[in-house]
Amino acid sequence: AQYEGFGDRHSELYIEDDKAREKARDKLLEENPIFRDDRRRVEAYQLEFPDDQIETYVEYSNLPAKGFEQERYLLEHAEFYKSMIDLKDLVPFDPGYKVPDAKYDEIYHQWEDLFEQYEAVTGTKSQRKAAREKILTANPEFAFDRRRREAYGNFVPEHLVDTYAEWFTTKPQKSDDPWFDEHPTQTYYGDDWWLMERMEFYDTMVAMGLWEERDFSKVPTKAVFALYKTYVGIPQGAPQLNYRARFPELDAWGVLKFGWVPIGQRGKKE
Image 1 (spheres, rainbow, N blue to C red):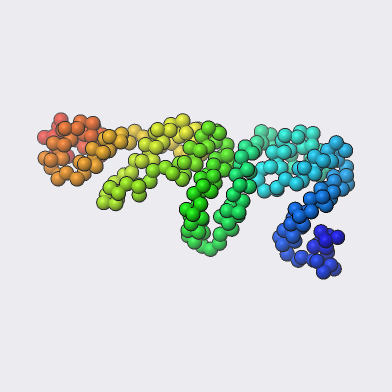
Image 2 (image 1 turned 135 degrees about the horizontal axis):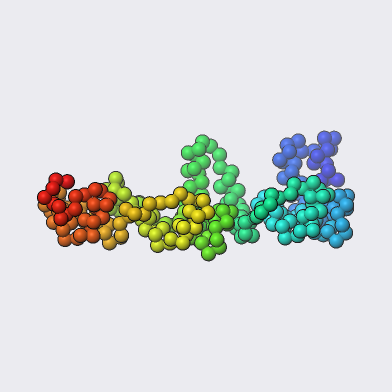
């Protein structure tokens, strides 16, 4: 009676707001699992599900609608899936339809409060961004798992899921190197090096259409860039030219990257 009363305009229990009513009913069912399951059974019989699928219907109906748990259940129970189409007018999945790994939903349940908090922020675009960054900064484990969940949602191969999360949460940043505080216009290569050390991950992201290709052809090695940092601090003119002559690998990269005249042609004006 209480469940129906929430939707009965003549009842003192009536809740006018649709979302509030649904939330109240969900809470009632959660707090009364025996009533909830019996209600599901009655519904299944009314829909004329086969006797051997009544408990399956109960089990399915008790899964969260958010996420992919219900879809995954249907794909794992072919006969019940067919009955849902025939008896409850379920729209069939498109051919080849697939759902993310179960860990996608497990991660959500593990951090459900923070996911809800993250999704519920309000304000202008910049205010929402700042509020969400604050949540992520204060909860680094959640931030990492949020990206893992995103990887599962994108069907990234299992062995690359953590690498995906690392890229978005812990990869090197320009701000990590104080040299760039004094040279803010210089190109940062830390993210390129990180990817070049994990080419399977990079190639997979490109092959899956998640990323555009990057051009690594002008990325220096870490050793050459260390030489370049020193080079930048040397007085221009002969001192820099002499330094390039001492380190031909730096000179070769500068020719490629900046269009330097090769040191062997140092008589020509650069």
